[in-house]
Image 1 (spheres, each protein chain N blue to C red):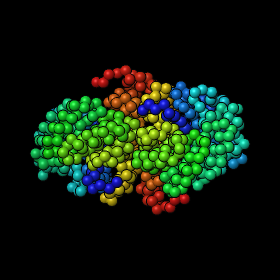
Image 2: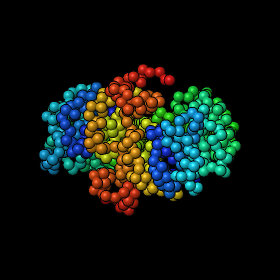
Image 3: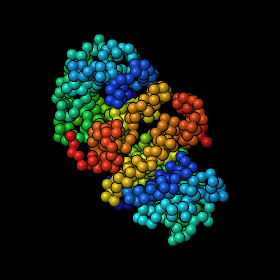
Image 4: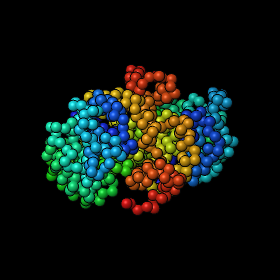
Length: 313
Length: 313
């Protein structure tokens, strides 16, 4: 599929950091950025810009905060742009320099639907500083339809670049992706729409392809699918699908071999039965992550029944 | 999705046997059949009925041959029926008893498109003995359209139950599945159509769902996706999608925990970069299986380039 508007956003370090508290070796991040630039990826999201008053900098690696000086040690100006994510309510507005003084091109504001007004406020702040802005409405598989419609109406009136469909729990299959892609594209006045999938049911890549078919142009993926729990859409598969000649999958394959097979052995993101169960049941993966760490001593089928009988938080 | 015509065919032992020469512990097969019967699976394919004049019975486990006495040690009469696969050119016609003397209900004839006449001949032989018959046209991603059309015309005139779309190389995504599902359903005069997917690009489950949406009713899956190379559609995910109350995923979860996590550690089917590469490039997985065994000493990107430059066998 070659459509020049398509942008690939790699979120390996940002979403993968949820598995290791962003304690990546600096050389790994440096190799990752260089490899992704060589592969022709449009944006590399190097982490969160979290509020240091709320998070202990000693408890987390640097990619929880993405200080400009840390970014400059691993990345460089190139056609591959740099993005960071900012959580509503966990971000210090004053931590953003004017765009002209920053290596960052794009800020993605992550929000639950109830906080969309706050997300627009934060987005407007960084937009005024000169950054491109995306709004990522998380956990949309738990959203009520009228709330979602209202949020999209408000977002249509902003000057942000893009709004994301985010399947935080890996619950969707093609029919929900088609439905939401059409809804977002119709509601957002020609704004770009993005897709961010989780792989609990091995559908992250499939759903990303379905989103492309429906006209979504901003595509999140990560190296070897690295991300929280079951992980994300594997970048190497997405690049096998996209026919735009600017992309080259080889540097991604090299990065997998050099760093990510090893990291996967240690951190174990990817398809696992507890993650499949939370995905099938449209639940947050936290119970599954606890199960994987041995906190639950139960069997898979007891875990399944336990989740069936638990109300949502 | 609840459609009473839907049949789930578990092929864990048959396709998984390609990873261990069918040397499954008898207790594992016994537990597997009992668990799948409890789960409400419609058919369990316990192996191949291979010709003992062509294959050394000492080199393979019993599920390469599926003798009636071996079947009776692990399985029993129940609403869950037993199937075996028979390869064109590798099957002794005389090895099949009349259906009334056999535990087997269904024979699935596996064929390449060039051998469809032979497949119909073998299918007719077992049909006359009283078995249900499926024809599985393998590697259809390499078939020429006129050859496929002619094969389907011939199959439309048989009294077999079902013809399968088989994505042997894990190459298809939704658009090809939709296309072939429609083609088969239109061509086959109301015969059932089946789908058998491989998971090279993590699309086996997604493509099975797409096939269901298009009206395909015979669905192959396997426990924890066990099958050659990248494996098949994971049964536990398919059961999460199908809403027919006769299915219960819990016995499948129990089997995974009791046997298949361990088998997976040993045999390593599932998503791996070499399998992804052969899937993306629409190639037989044999080169990738050799790479996984360390026969190639190359890097992933060298393997990719090597396959790009190799003509098909």
